[in-house]
Length: 170
Ligand SMILES: Nc1nc2c(c(=O)[nH]1)N[C@H]1C(S)=C(S)[C@@H](COP(=O)(O)O)O[C@H]1N2
Ligand SMILES: [Mo]
Image (tube, rainbow, N blue to C red):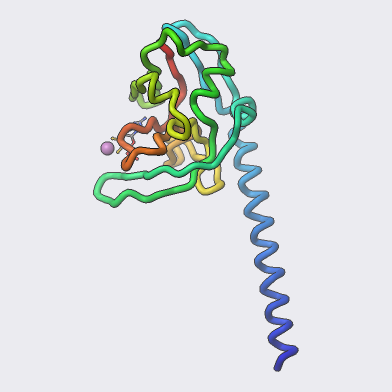
């Protein structure tokens, strides 16, 4: 009997290990699929730089929380992965000193203005590309990505920018 329990635990440990490994591989390959995902930065309407997901991941990748609320449902707290939005602007060589806002535009024509003081805050506005360790799917695949601007400290997600493709710093 004792021996059987040992075998069962052993088998379970192996199954959990294999599942964890497969999940890890899965999220890596999903990210690889999104390697052609791009995000453009403008300064006062002028094209500054277009960044790939691979480049953006080098700007201080971190996990953070976001309260995603969709119509008719309660807000749900998810863990997202991305970079602080201000890091992206810094890496693009844009000074925030003389600026008022960052307007993020999306593939569906949606545009969200963020106050420059909000952008400067720590741990609040992020450029996300993963949710619960999986790459964000695009609009055509029923997702919010490949890039999603998350306002981490907000109670709801009405000021997030789904399918974000561009930011203009003005
Ligand atoms: N690109 C884009 N982002 C958007 C929206 C949108 O229509 N387009 N809607 C906003 C609103 S009002 C909410 S509540 C959240 C969640 O919207 P969803 O429920 O349509 O996913 O996304 C926000 N970001
Ligand atoms: Mo909304």
